[in-house]
Length: 273
Image (cartoon, rainbow, N blue to C red):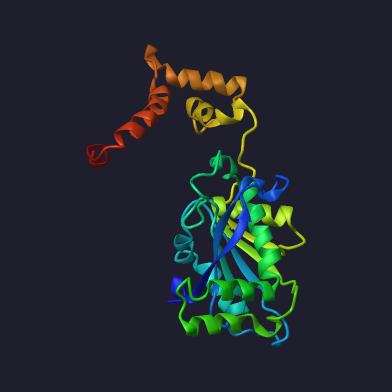
């Protein structure tokens, strides 16, 4: 029951479509959805010490998917008395810009997304009074029960009327979301104390064509051989490929099979095959 939307209150925050345009509202705005725990987690620190924030940097799916499949975040929050926040990535779920926005897909980028998250942390989560006003302005339109709304306000603690309360923020994410978490820590260390990034290839962008072709080169060369190939290993590989004069077309055939698999896999009969 802990890993569900039932334990979260979802709100919407107005974000500029382009954080780097001046004035920022010139490109238009959209409503970003974020969800925050609506109950008070037992906190090991004194009541006057604000709880840390565990912030999930949403990626390429609706927010609900990550709420229900991120057990580590929930378990650590229970142990450390953290307040859990899930933020939805722009252009996903209910965080969709208006359809009339010109060139709207130009604003679907990782740099715009992490700037959304940074603004949400600094201007909302670090300002309890702002968060309270935001919740009150959207209640009961978002359909919370009175009990959930009261528990949500209670979770803000003794600091609910204060202007700015810096709280330690740990970002969580996996895959692309993990990359966003890592970049949050790198770009905004003044607001993000740490990041737990799983399967996040933040350096995984080859800058040259040779890098893009490395997998093909390795398969052609032979997985058991050193890469880049040496003159000696090339000669050895060639001798294996041409035993008794027969040509070994396996590497080329293997590479050619992937586009074919992609085509066949688009049909039900192909998947069954």
